[in-house]
Image (cartoon, rainbow over all chains, first blue to last red; front, top):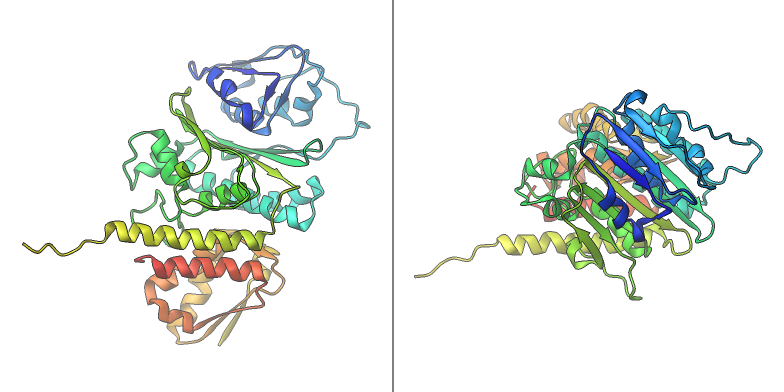
Length: 319
Length: 97
């Protein structure tokens, strides 16, 4: 596998980075980076860490970084994760900023502890902490329950003061969305599987409307809705497909049950990622009150179920 | 009547679905079987997730129908928690559960 850390890769411009990832030769990982400057979304680091954690340090080749911003990678803990020496020294008196370094979460208890510790690290007000811990809980629980990955979820986050945004990245190397959805549905490709996963009330655990006792198929829809309302980016990449919710332009807020009706971009021929990656930005300037968001979600959810019921409704045939 | 104080087990953010399921199986269901009314007490909890509430109550509606809602009360819920509970109960009733 080969991965090149570019000078810039955030959710808005991440496509070239994803296209450049080489997933062949899963027994070796070669990491190269832009020589002058590295400024990347935490999701990039979560991806690299989740690839590296499956390998021994001897199987990882990381070129010596020369970019002036290389300290960011050290701070986020990427080299510790990979078990390779960076040669970068951090002056402990430097301000560390507000970030959550790469963290591996493998159990439900680890997730609960992580959420408790996360909010103080980012110095968030309750209004901002609420959607963030909601997102972390739902996304990481998805990994723990559905990915079947022995390595769990690799998460990281960073606060960017320039645009007052928290960026979150979660990666796993599990079975991926297509395989999860294919247990109960028949998505024809990775992108169709992602679409199904984002529609409220559809879960890979059952064909039944309303889900099972443990899964409703609503978690990703809630998260996409948080991003829609707050005009944030949201990206889901699995297999060869990627769905990216683009920032809402219109002033009026409309949540769609079908993600393809949202303002979005998608790819379906990317290098195959064996697992699932989610990146999300949470802009603190535009964060709406969580309870207002729930009103919108409630309305959309109800309409979606009614619409699917209507689609299944059969009329008598009189001949 | 049985009063189940959730914060003792889930802290201020009720998100652990495993605990939700355990509470349902070990406390709510046995009480309902004994024809007791159940109060789910959210005092001390400031937020929750849809997944937690789903794991806590959806199977009760599936097993007993919506009549079970006349035997369960939700106490000390702030507006956010109330809305999440309402969403779960709404979609369970709209679905064919």
